[in-house]
Length: 215
Image (cartoon, rainbow, N blue to C red; front, side):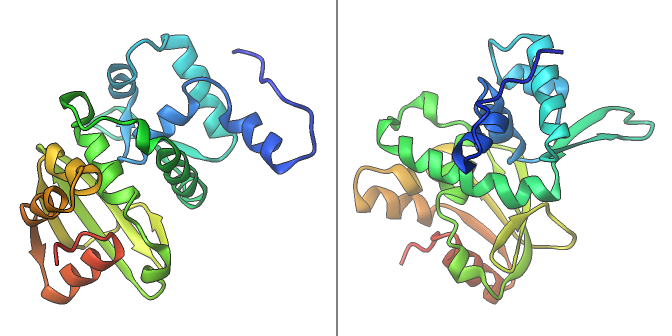
């Protein structure tokens, strides 16, 4: 195990960086906000990370209480990593702030139109906690065939709980363009192509909370 580095400063910024400041850590959390992932999934998506480094970062995030490791029973019999309840409370606002900071550096090119980027742009960046103060519902987003499940509970994002209130189907390009399109017409056109399935009131609430209304 690599020795944990620390700034040795009694400051909230330094304390945060003690946990999140190492290379790859935030990108691991970025992957896990999209839902539980196997170790091999993380290795595949985080091209360039060494296996021992990934294991060390996951171990550190478990020790910090931000990530849970679960052993699924047979016949699946595999280990999956997911954000813990504490992780769901603390990680999404951090990732949203960092993504917003770098938003003007992202080009709407093919390399940006991945299912995960579509989820981050379309869902995380659009989330308005103030509009969700009285909302409690689970959602499923299928982006180019990859499912993302999550819930909103009284203004906070959290792990999904059955049953799902609304299912959304979209392409990564449309989910990304809905937030990053250069013109209002491009953004509106992308939003109009999203497909929502669910009760009308539930769909309306989701559109409002995540700013997915084309009106």
